[in-house]
Amino acid sequence: MENYAKVILYAYPLLKTVGDDYAEHIRNKAVLSYNSPLTTERLAEYLTQEIVCKNALEWLKTTVESLMDRLTEEERTLLDIRYFGKTKKLRDFLKRQAEKRKSGGTGCSERMYFRRQQRLADKFGAMLFYAGVTQKVYDEQFAELDIFRKIHRFVEAGKDKKISADERRLLGADGD
Image 1 (cartoon, rainbow, N blue to C red):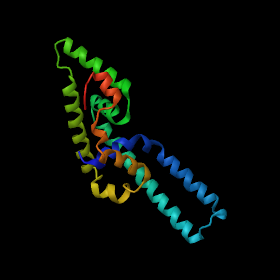
Image 2: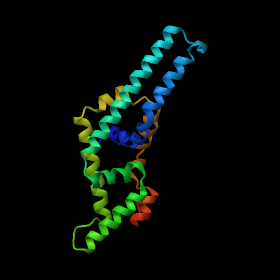
Image 3: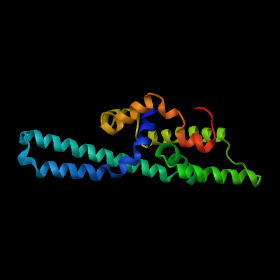
Image 4: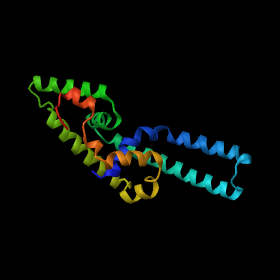
């Protein structure tokens, strides 16, 4: 999976409200324009840039949501666990997998859990690419925004590859 796809997944919870936040910011800047140190022309350019950014973020949010709708419930649960920090879902997921193993089905061991996570990450990265969210689009429209820059540093440092403390505790794993 490309790093930009991981960054988008980690940022997704923030995208849920960012459109409203941007709209409020734009409205406030416009209303308070009489008190701005910027010239009218420069303020108009700034507001236009902010509107373009808001629209791009809303497009990204809608695209990610439409792709998530195509995933199975188990795949959405795995994304929730890994990228959105929903540890209760991990507990429930592991309980269901243990029940499957006990009833003679194919449950999910720790190793299988991480393989599934990797396959799902690769699948979602490909889905993003084919939906038009490519590395180039990411770099041009999102990479310089604060929320993405911070997450990108986290991913580039490899910190996303380590299992979280909650995953480690629930899986009973000893290492990364």
